Image 1 (tube, rainbow, N blue to C red):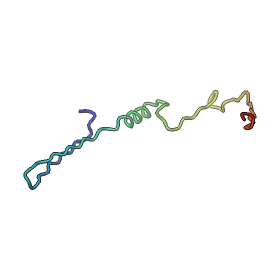
Image 2: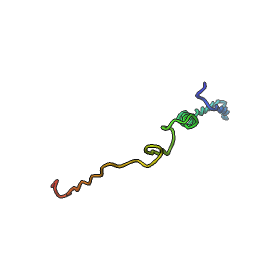
Image 3: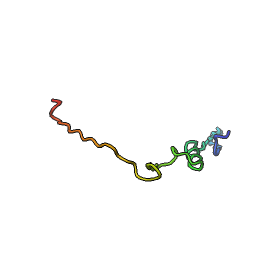
Image 4: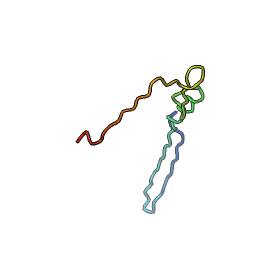
Length: 76
């Protein structure tokens, strides 16, 4: 019952005497609630944006940059 947000019930009476019952259940948004709880607790995986910094909050040091040239005709 804790997963149910709301319940709506409709009873329809037809001219021929028949009765139709319509029941609608709405469930809580569990992933959304978990994400909000994670943000409140400071869990990094629950944030939409994640910033990464280097030592002492500075920029990340790049030690090596490599460039690879690929010839598209080489595969033919």
